[in-house]
Every structure is written in structure tokens, then in C-alpha cells.
Length: 124
Image (cartoon, rainbow, N blue to C red):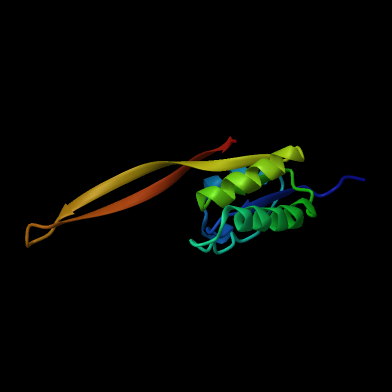
């Protein structure tokens, strides 16, 4: 009997907005489960951030994920990645190619549009 494998998306970017390439790459690890990133209070102390990371790490570990995509506020991300890796969990970041187009507007001002194209998941 095989256990179901999960790829936890712990970001502010729901998987239903991902490209086909990113979904395909995630499914190599298992079924995608969105686990939304918490709102991080900018006035939170280091201890509060660590406590929040412990709380979410416990919830994520309960799913016994094959891998976790984790990107977001830097202090929290650092804390939770370290906790997950301590338990042997593969934690990845999505790498992208940034494509910028610039349009000169009639008044001489410019507008830039950035498009991010998924390339791969890279392990922390």
C-alpha cells in the first residue's frame, strides 16, 4: 500500500494561478496542496516570528510532505525552512526568468511590465 505524496505550496501565490510548467514540476513531488503564507506583522519580534514558524511547521509536518515550496517574508521564511529541514523535509524555491517590456507613452513617460516565467524548483 503506497502513501499519498504531497507538495505543499507555502506562499502567497495559489497554485491555481501557476503555469502548466510549474504545476507539472510540482506534481513530480506529489499532489499540490496550497497552505497559504501567514500575514506577517512588520512590528513582530524575532521570538514572535519564531513561534509563528513553529506553529506552521507543525501543521505542515502533519501532512508528511515530500517537498515544500516556501517563499515570502524573509525572517519567517528563514525560520520555517530551518525547522522543516531539521525534520528532513525537502524545501524548495521557485526560480523564474524575469522578462521586462518597456512602452513609451504618448506623453514621453514609460511603463514597464514584468513577466515572470517559471524555470525550476531549486532546493534550499
